[in-house]
Image 1 (spheres, helix red, strand yellow):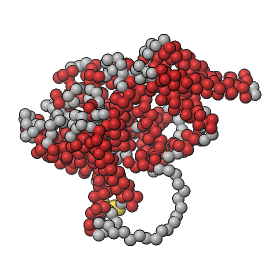
Image 2 (image 1 turned 90 degrees about the vertical axis):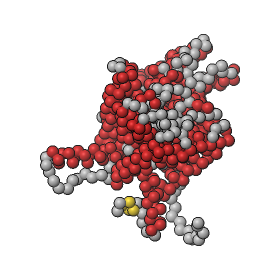
Image 3 (image 1 turned 120 degrees about the vertical axis):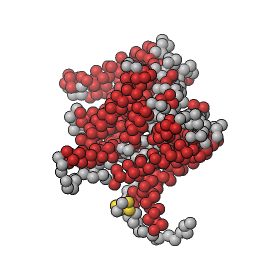
Amino acid sequence: MKKYQWFIFLTVILSIISLFLGQIPDRSYALLIFSSVIDILLIAVVLAETVYGIAIARYKRIYLRENIFPLLFTLTFFVLFIYSKFFYTAIILSDLAIFAILLRNVFVVLKIYGKNKISAYVEKFTANPSQSILLSFVFVILAGTLLLMMNFATVDGRGLPFFDALFTATSATCVNGLIVVDTATTYTIWGQLVLLVLIQIGGLGIMLLTFFTIFLLGRRMSLKDKMLLSYMLSEDDNSSLRSTVLGIVFTTFLIEGIGALLLFWGFLPTLGFSIKNAYYSIFHAVSAFCNAGFVLYSDGFESFRLNPVVNFTIAFLIILGGISFAVIHNVRLVLKERFTALAKRQRGSFQNDLTLNSRIVLVFAGVLILAGTLLFYILEHDNSMASYGLGEQYLAAFFQSVTLRTAGFNTVPFSNFTVSTYLFMCVFMFIGASSGGTAGGIKVQTVAVIGSAIRSFLRGEKTVTIQNYQIGNDKIRSAFVICLSGLTAVFVAVFVLSLTEKADVLKIMFEVCAAIGTTGISAGITSSLSVTGKIAILLLMFWGRLGAITILSAAAFDKEQVNISYPQADISIG
């Protein structure tokens, strides 16, 4: 990239930093000077670019007529710049001023990146789908952080401190649910809506929503966009991308809508027939389907442990969100064909059947939910659930088993479990749910492949098979890389937090597994974490949502493939 391009790119980065520094209360004189210097650089870059374009134009009138919108764009930038500087110099740090500064910097980013001057650099960077996905999450988290720092987001009118806002935005975007402040009492309705949008974006992915908008507007996609979308959806057939994206988004909204209606019914005894009930129903339906775990009640769902409508609705929203869109689509096609044949009394073979991926996900989901229910009941019926009736205990055990691997809701206090309960919960959270869903963890497909590889090794078989299907070596390597990287991340995080935090190691490990599994349940130490602890948990949430393969692929350097044969080594193993 040319020096001029580096200058523009660096200016944009510094403007983003300046934007966050502007939210710090009681800024020092040095910070004020730094922000002013960045503002001057921004205004100089935009002014120079505008004047240069007019100066080199051969026909000025034609140039002005053809570039009326970019010039109005620049004029808007100047208005926002003057407005934001006026509020800063007048020391009136209102939300309107901060919002103006936000728009001002967004205008700069769009203006610079909208030009072809550094498009080569952008295309080179976004040619890697993993990097594109990672960057999209980073930018959404940064935008959410800034919004949560604004005065309108919190009840006290001060906004969240930077690290708390960053932690919360990451937790919402990565559909985790770990919190450092009480969601029910800290945020205004606007702050809660910010969280809701971040959760929905995190569940579907900002890029998927972008492509959904493109399809709705009837616009065409470039080949690069199709390749990126194919990577995101693991879809080999580019001709079906449009129907796949529209199906995923519409299915999401449909399931969340049905869930919201059922929750509205479940909340009637406490909230009545009201707008608040409708809002709470929509918020918790989205949070449950996206497996986010954010709740607008300070005690979670503990006060609803006797309400079967709320328990089963939340549970099945979690299950549907966790099994992935591909499995939902496959099951829908199979059921539709079976019911159609049954209605017409037709017999014979069917065109659609459950794929191997769907069978693995559904079998593992059933086994883990049943095993989790029995283990939780056996270990906690005389402990945390001792005061519950038998029906309450089984319902609570089922709910916690469902929410354990994915979502992070609770109907039982998590602070006084037995050691055995914490340990088995760590294992379930580390496994997570299905690949392609909204949950974290290493995923059940990974566990299935690793288990099959171990079984084949013990039997002396040369190939790894699952239900008469052979598993490729690339899938096996990926599965072991995911598992090993996850275990390494957990060990490093537990080691670091054991040095920085004054908490029991078992609860630290529980917190770490909840973060990497994007489960969001807590042993009660999240709010008391140090800055180092919050950063460690934040990185784990990011790792858990995007997955090891995406992050490692994004970090990998492009190298030319050279086929070289090396002599075989003889190494003693075991």
